[in-house]
Image 1 (spheres, rainbow, N blue to C red):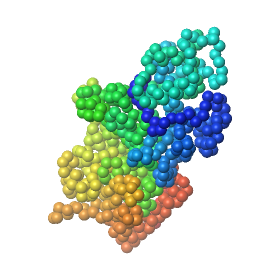
Image 2: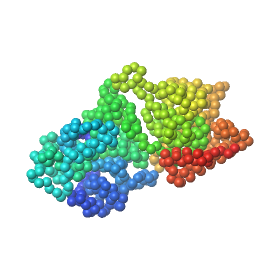
Image 3: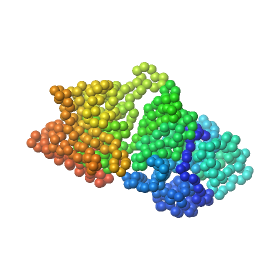
Image 4: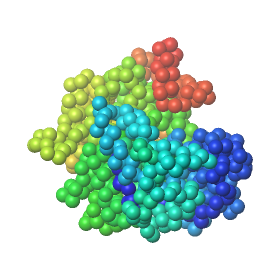
Length: 624
């Protein structure tokens, strides 16, 4: 996606840049840099692979802040670091600098890209003009983004001539492109223009900085070449300035409220403010239009709101124009992990514990229906996805969503996504979750997963439960009572006598701990037992509850579980006199999960494959 060249998308450094040393003679031999020798060993490896990281550290006021800490990955202890000043990799090209802001609750988030200190915008028009000619000559059109990236890099390499440091180009080889400026002059010019956004170079000025060979190739330094290649791929194929944010595995939400900085919610450091932002409404409008086109959801004044999915699966909401958004166009991205969090990840973060997980494991294995309920951003979808590893590996799973978020590890998985009316489509072209849910009942699934129940699809879901199809879903309600009220009221309108087809309700919330941080916790796990027509009340039993004082989950339903004793034990043929033995099975599975965690099978796919292997070996067989 192209954001254009010369747009007012600016980076505002929270410190005054200062050159610690002259790096011009160090590019051929990084190890000769005094700054390089000051770095810890892991940072030196990063700098060798990514020289632009050394360039950034060279303008960073080390004397004031000290050399940043370098992390290969962020552990849970990183959030306890005081006076934040650390760097970690987002992907192969980009690094993230987290820097303390003593005057604000939000600290700085600084993406360090290959193009960060090299303003190659003056080269872009010339490069793009040559690209058009070369692309026209291609025999085949690349289809995938990987193919497009490979072709683009190849063509850029043909367009430029890389002048190595310390070498000269003879006068007879130079075209009429004017004089080259030094790397030092380029950095000074960049810091005085793009960072402050006070002025822009006009076309005649930037043309004077281009040097060409007689064959038309553009002369660039190695640093400019890396920056140019990165920016062309970033802006033409990927998501432009959003690339570092989307590449960072530790980001949960990306928010642009209008003109100003981009804000993020970080898994480790919570709310942060990026040094990248928009300085003009027209620039922001142009950006969101291009972004909507990139995801094939055109946005206009007539249709100013878009809900869609990015190529990586993240959810995005765009609101266009200042008529309905007073601060200008805005967008919010809810990121999804390429690999979902497993139940062991949730246990390590204390969202639940091993006994809770073991209880859910045995209930889901034997076909109980379950809702994960809570407020917005309480982690409902994450939890629902994590517990899919407990579904029998041989089962057929159907997922139904309006925005695809769920990732099911089973091979026999049918993924259905609702479709709204698109531009130019006729009547009847939309396919709702209600339609998909009705269709799913004819597909003979063992489990149906619904992304979220909020409307008439709820009645079909409960009809499915009545006919023996277990259903799992998320729901917006902060308690079991509120959940039942919403189910029985408009627009879902479930008959009260049908509600007890739902077996388990997990109530989850984002809660504040004494240390000031926000954490996600399963507040309770409840069994719906039945409806009393005389009192018109519902009976449910709390199996587990979270104790906010100890931050632990208490198995308060031990010995009184309706599902374990009356449903699952009956399915297993356990005689009534021995039904208490079902609780030993919960304890056994809790120990299995703990051993899998200790053995390192923590990740989503690894855990699923190990659970499948354990089941195949007969280790989950319950002795009667």
